[in-house]
Length: 342
Image (cartoon, rainbow, N blue to C red; front, side, top):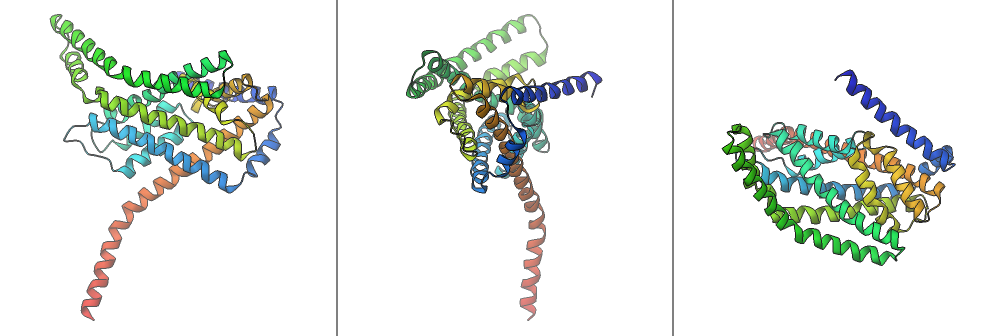
């Protein structure tokens, strides 16, 4: 790692810390009371958030497995569902302390190292499936903007959101056909200019890849939409856990902007940036500044604890599953021999 990269990483971390400190000062939040409030959150609230995190990981895993099925060759190994879930849970946990794209792509790349072509399947596959989360956030941000600027009722957000999602689903087929057509034309032009074989082969693969099938794209878009709903429910549940009465519809309006802020990757795990985005949006919607800041801090802590707990539990199960099969059959065999002897 170069000195420049270390300096950039440190600067990014400092920026995140500074943003959090600024929010605490602006909201006049008592950190000690916030910590006490976090400690007094009922255990059932942790369970609910953890279960929602599990559902979130299941959806992300299913998206990646769908993409991986289109990417892999017949000679490539296929990670089990548990392995896919495990590396996704690890990537989601890492995404809370490093940029989310790097955390997830890194975990899946390492997870597919022994299965063949890890960079293409782990890195490219993760970035491709995550792009649909970004697309859904962009579509729903338009619904949030319309509701925001027109001071409309929450039902208007739901109606506009459904319309935007329908447009996304309908436009997916023509857009992918246009993408294939563009790849074909570029490939033919490069062939006439005697371009490198690698460039031509890459464009040919892009033109014929099953990854760019309309059916797969629509499936990923719908799974990302469900994933968005779960993210909103997690945010709302953390507010309920601390008795912060922030309406569910406000969480739905705010969440697209928070997800888009994640793409900037200016701070590790979006620390500070995500909180600033959510607090600013909630403040505009009428939530008191101090309450919005306090919720953002509790939400960060609660989600981080639950996410890492799920990841550690999953990795523990994976480890035990590898160890137990080596001993159980032998034990059973010994018991069977003892019975035969008797």
